[in-house]
Length: 71
Image 1 (spheres, rainbow, N blue to C red):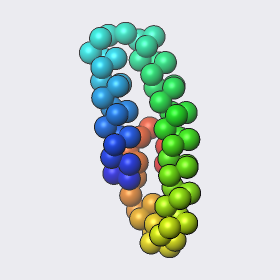
Image 2 (image 1 turned 90 degrees about the vertical axis):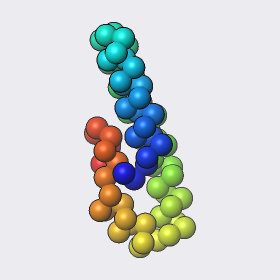
Image 3 (image 1 turned 180 degrees about the vertical axis):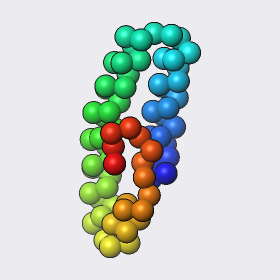
Image 4 (image 1 turned 180 degrees about the horizontal axis):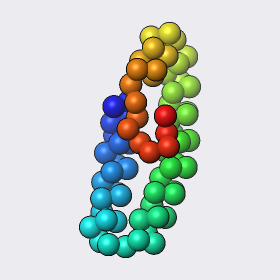
């Protein structure tokens, strides 16, 4: 998993909404986390690419985020 802390936060928050059986909050949670996490990942990966170069690019190609809609 390329960003394990984001993976954990994402699925914990989605799981909480599923346990609470709150479809409106589930949809809002997924929607808001997608945008927020996409921005965080883009910023982090830019820094990692500058710091590690080809090693990071190779790692990024072979390691998924396991977050929906975020490659």
